[in-house]
Length: 635
Image (cartoon, rainbow, N blue to C red; front, side, top):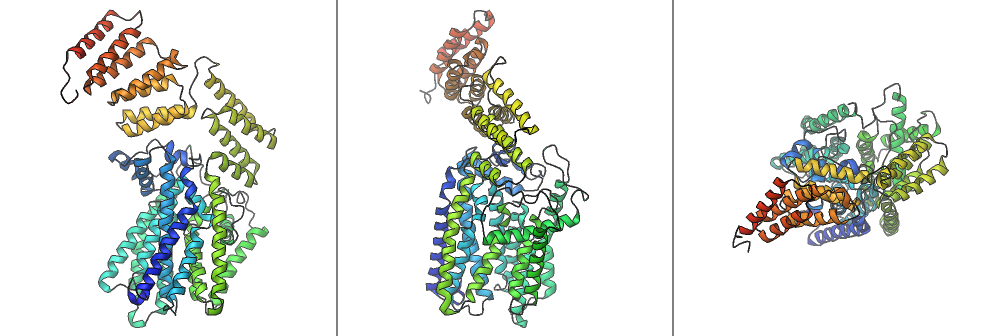
């Protein structure tokens, strides 16, 4: 930042002070997120039950950059974000939530810098440095502390949107440097903007329309600039075409993936099921919805149900269309509002890819307002610069108080992401559709039942039955819970671990066969937390630990498998086999005494029916351990 732009060293210190203040306040406001749990709303398929996720490796990278079916979108950088967090957090939710907070703080700082650039460029009295910086600070604070940001911050899968937003904001900041750059450096800033845009749309394609925002910036710059310094329109057009190419490619892959048949994801509606008029009505309603929720962020929910039934000629949809079209026309004919019109067009464009044009029903989640919210904050900041001198303190005070109110509401909204109970409670409370409510009750009850918490599942089912006593899906859920209870209690013979634990164990075994020990260990641990008394699980984990060169852990798991309530599940032959593996693992590690002790234990627990050949082999193994001199390093 030059002295001309920033007004000297004092102005630079003010900018840094405001930036640090924003980061500290936004981080402090969402500090509780660090102790949040995962929730079974995409966190399961994206993270903890993802059969591909692990630290970045050749194998995982190959999947990331070739997959478009898991999420029905091409998001290799989104998967890479998850994989990078996995490398230090594994299957613990802490790392994902802390990364969300860090990204939110970084994005808040980027929003502040973008607003600062916009105000300096498009405000006539740019020499009013202190007021300009304060306006940018207020705009960024309103964006950072707004309850609409809570979903992206508090939800582990919201990392996709925070990561995409990070690169989109960086791209915008780079593009804003183009007019001030010389002819030689313009190409570098343009390349940086294009690269960051590419990274954004392959993190998550919510920023597909960002080049249209750049067009709005070009138009505003063209209007204010000296004709001798204007960049040729043809060159600007070519630049936008180059920028749009990766966006068009990602959009094509996304659309194709949406219509690809899948046993998991619902198919996209046909034009007869979801007509063009209904799609248009939904688009106008969503544009109006996010504008209204920015002003009045009450009754927010992760899954609004008001778009389940779209009657285009109803008052709500007609009113939304009239409001959006009317505001567009008003800004177009307002002589002094050309820059405001450009901001409005940017708002509409950024929400364009998120209007659910191929989805019915569509859930307009808070996360979709992530980038559009920056445009609204820019409008607030630009509006502050138009306030007369005598009224500035009053307006600044009002907006700072509004920021404080937003921060309180954001903390309240964040808490619904703390765990599955809080999330499902909010979604059911705000649901206006009985079928959706029943589906959520069913998902909520099965979430607990699959983790062995049958009593909690029964409580949820009882509450659901009071809501819809004769619902067929709830009656079917009664039978499902009965089967899960019988399996886990062992009334049908052998007790089984909870289904979620069994799935983690399956992933652990699959990862161990694929030569990915870190992921295998993490899934064994997750399974063990859900089924701490499962002897078969401890036995399998012990076998894997012995084969992976972790004999102490394997020995601990052996004792857990053979001394607990399910010890009868592990027969004598299985015990001998595991102890043999543990002994060999100790021996290879130079721990010959421990190896010998393991074989002695194997001989002690051998079944009377053990073959003489197997017993002789154990005694030979024991003799080898005793006679082999341990290396000096091991001693």
